[in-house]
Image (cartoon, rainbow, N blue to C red):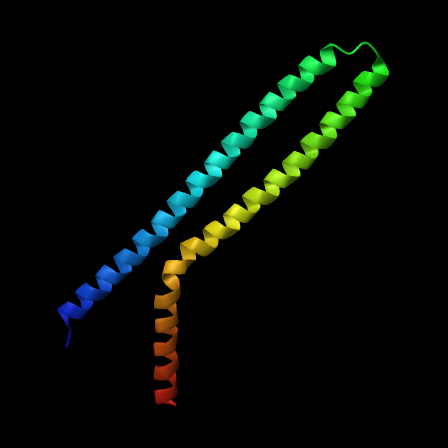
Length: 119
């Protein structure tokens, strides 16, 4: 027979799980957006400072050396930032899945026990 109390409890548990997952996603996306905005601002400021610095150079060799140094540091900064944001996305996936771990484990155990009982 259908038990409304059990159905209500399961619905509440499901909704709580969904809300926890959504909260984790929201928090992670905000952190990623903040990190990307901070990096963009820093990269822009660095490029403006580089342009100001290179415009005062009097020789081609010095300009070439400054440009090489800037490109190297900009590339290294980009790679570091891309790695950091990649790790943030990996953490986002883990945090979003975490609320589902217990219900999935419980359902898996129920299926295994039902299969074992049927065999």
